[in-house]
Amino acid sequence: MAGQVEVTIQGLGGDELRYEMDASGTVAILRSAIADAWSLNPRSFQFFAGSFALRDCAEFGSCSGGEAKLILQLVKFDPLLGLGKFDASAHEGIEIESLAGDGDGHYSTLRKTSDSRDSNNVFLSHPIREPCFVEFEVLQSLDEISFGVTGDRQQVEDCSGFRNLWLDCTWIFSKRKSMPTLLFAGHKSNPAGHPSISQNDRVALFVDPIQQEVKFYRNGTFIASNLPAHPLPPQTDDPLWIYVMVDQTGDEVSIVRFGPGMVFDYSD
Image (cartoon, rainbow, N blue to C red; front, side, top):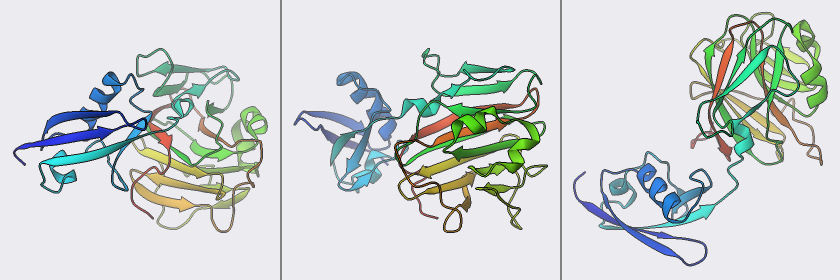
């Protein structure tokens, strides 16, 4: 789409910025410019055109409906950066590497480096009290692997090996081996037609502690929800936690996306 679009960004305090953008340019370019201009974390705000949140891949010409001008509202939010960091403090036999190079561990990778424990249930650093999501990439999985959520961090963090099968405080999606495909509050199931987890898959979780729901996705396709049969615990002062179970030396999982709200724009 040829031409230019005059984009006006309106901040919460009444501040405005204007940019002449190529109609084929994307919102991602504008995000970087605004973050620099207003000294913002680029993950801490969202652009809205009216009531519609814009994805970073959206082109200005499409957003403006072919018009020469486009007005966007900037809305700030907590980017939940702890969702991008594995917490290795309770473990041995694993290592965590930052992929972002920012020193904070955001977009980190988990590797199992020894069999000193049969398996490791490794948690993310953010305590979940709001609807949010994380998407992982399975870089290597040689045996069992699980992705899930729990309200009993201590019990799950201390658990290893086959004991994971008998936990009644987890809601997880697993590679189908010894572990079932789904384990919701102790209820095991292997639904027909549900694919297993393989190397290079992307596995995403959306957790809503208010609605007591967790949804699982594989490579962008909806897999399962725990509702209505097996709701998460009622929301209290104690948070929920997302974790990954790695089982064999060489297993490797990376965090590729995270944040508040829904993992994908479409409904299931």
